[in-house]
Length: 476
Image 1 (spheres, rainbow, N blue to C red):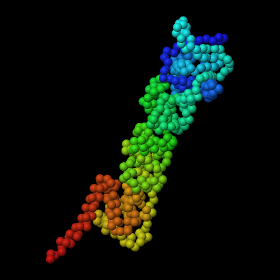
Image 2: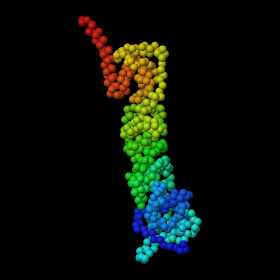
Image 3: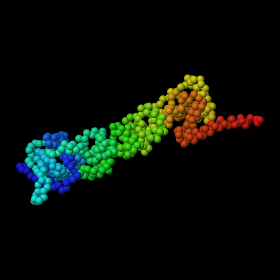
Image 4: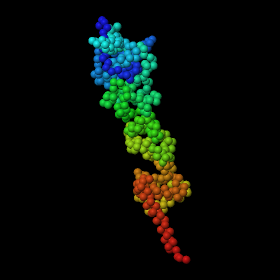
């Protein structure tokens, strides 16, 4: 090539909504794509005097690139590269020309500038042309786009479209994209590192790298106004794949905020909220409870806190979904019931032999046969009654239980402090006899019925002998 030639860009529609930063965005995107496709060194953006230069080190721009509508190479790499439409470069040049920004593009294939010229054969129709001149350096690496007349502010705005220049920290990478630490009030949604939307009530920013069909369709020529419906499923997928406490801890705070109605939108997705609970459960000592459970089990909650557990309040619908579920390690997600079971399983009784009881305690303990007789006798399955200095926690009260029926050892265990009075000891023994007879847990309809029956038996045993004595007494 020995002389300058004109190449009609054939721009049919100018994007009026674009300003200079949008145009520079496209030039940066092209450079970043070329870096990825050719695996060359990082793109540089530098300023020399009044001119800004965007430089990649790829294959070099050719004037033929202005003829493309869709790049087959880029379509094969959607999610890795930003570009899709070859017209993006022409849109950028038209916008910069409209904003009186001078453009020069240099590669080993030539030097390209812009010129307003009449269309070939139509002197009265002036359009934007690329003016192609011979290369200055046949060994020039990549493409350098030099812009004169672009302000520092506009360049900063252009760079701000890219994750690479945003300073947002990647918290976790998944198969469909990256979860990012949000900077400022607005969350940012990127596709392959390019900003396409913002959200005012998300807990994180996101970079989608695996695109769905709706997302591909939504990446229109303008790259703006991409709606949430296009990327919501990808964001859910990211969050459901996350395994790091860094993400789950933020989601946990948002779970608590649901009760106040101030939560981020991500935990409004039930499956995401449940997954966050599973991550937290696997990462440390957490107990998930509802607001109602906190009010009804305040002592148990205090007991758990003293054991070093963090309490996470979740809505009823979330609690229903985690009850009986397993976390990422296969362990049960811990609610107040699981906490009690774990505590009980790790508990060791401190049994005390009858001979080591005080005289007053032995006298009360020796009333055991008479007390059992009031209930119709000790059930056959009860092989022994033991006294322990310590007792498992009662989930309902958070306090040590007074007694329990232990079916595995076929024994009733009574806490030693119940031997302070006949009333306390007898009440606890009779309560545990009811458990041993029925096998039902506390606060169940079945146990309440069994306890009522036992009270009737006890009353009959106590009242009938007294009635017989009264009837036998002679009338005065």
